[in-house]
Image (cartoon, rainbow, N blue to C red; front, top):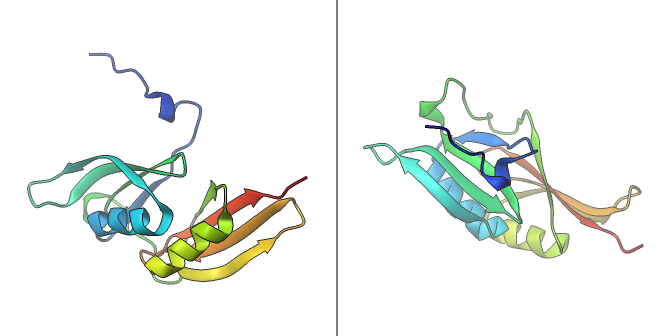
Length: 135
């Protein structure tokens, strides 16, 4: 059976993060970043083998760490940062901090034309949110 590549997966590299507690991460990303869940595949034990969420139009894959041959980042360390362009970086940052994200750099106008903030989620992943500055 030949499967088609979903439109939202074409011409892109999709981040796939591994977390301890994927169900809690999905809940957090909904509260902090307004993420919506597309679907999840759970094992008999209720842990998530694979899930997809959308954060401000960007698809993110995630799953529980015990199911992957690698571990999530240790506290305070990350191997990647997840960049997301949003209409209002200040509002997204405030929402995320209220939900429990750690503010690493507050929203600021950058010399390269964006207002940007950096946060760390409770699972150790770094998120960079950007809004284009008015021309």
